[in-house]
Length: 539
Image 1 (spheres, rainbow, N blue to C red):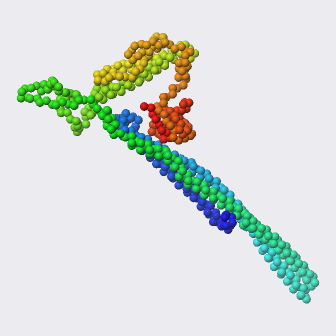
Image 2: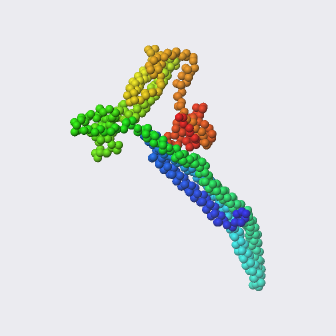
């Protein structure tokens, strides 16, 4: 069944129906646009919420950061940030695949419908024009036929009139004959116009309009089919990201299971243990026997009280719960910070000194490596003058040597303080370099003993590697690896393509924006969505 056969006389209905169908498409596009705005606003609010409660960069060294409950909370915030990214992806895909696509298709349908309606209007105008010609010829035939009848009656009356002359009779007959001839021509013209109109009317109702109606039917069915696809995409767009959203929710569940209350308690002990001994019993001072009040201090086996350990006035009692003063005094709240951390309890002081030593050793090792590199570069310049001037490195070599000496002094100072605090004084192993007058470098062990090393031959591979190191920036060492769970096209600038199951090296962790920097074995680097991979960091 088609419109051309069944609805041949319902032009107005078809025109109204097709217009209503196009308006439904427009209404659905507006509906999806508003849905995308909701998704975008929701994602924005989630990101702002995660950012609001996320740890600031400057406060990542806070003691709470080591607690598993705190780390799990940060993991939840990161997962919510990734979840927000998936909501943004839903909005983007709906806008691209539904709104933009349907809007473009709608414009095409409107233009096509307009063309068909113009064809129908032209066919109708042509039929109306033919009908007007038919009506005109019909009226002319009617008028001329009456005139012919009157002329014939007048000729017959004149012929019967005895008073009429022969000439009058002859003239009346000629006039009647002429009118009859004109009426006959009008009759033939009317018959021809009638035949033409009937033919065009038959063409109009049985061919032209059914064809146009069928085209409009095809247009409307294509519109309905396209709209149905849009309905399906509305659901499939969200279904497509459901696995990743599920991963985000699994990550939140995992964050909850990773909380270890026992370990958190041990962290609190480690961070806050003072190292002080509990105070001993307060001795009885018998004033009736004239015993010196200070004699109790020299009693054997009696540990010093908390006032001696904390450097406080002995006349004041020691309480676990300090009473707050009504008047705020900064000196009573915050002790003076010293370079040797003497303001801290013994246990915390040892930890801070050990941490400071490790930092100095790392910095010293960095300066040492730079010194070694500058020495090699100078050797290369001396043996290959075309590569550079050795004298140009003098200022850098001098500055590096000064840095090394400064760090050695700090290292010795902090080792002494650590020994005073009762620490073991174990520090990172490092090697240092000094430069002789010729620019050659010697290697020293941590205890200061020199070890001789022969100068490599320029033809050896170490110089080839040295040249490469200075031609290209040194690549950052990987901090872990990751395995792709999904394909990623990497179409945006700064991203990298990724296939499901591919293993990549992690160069830089996610900083809260939902992206992780990775590298392939061939050296290609770029960013990928954190939620698309499982990451294992080096311990």
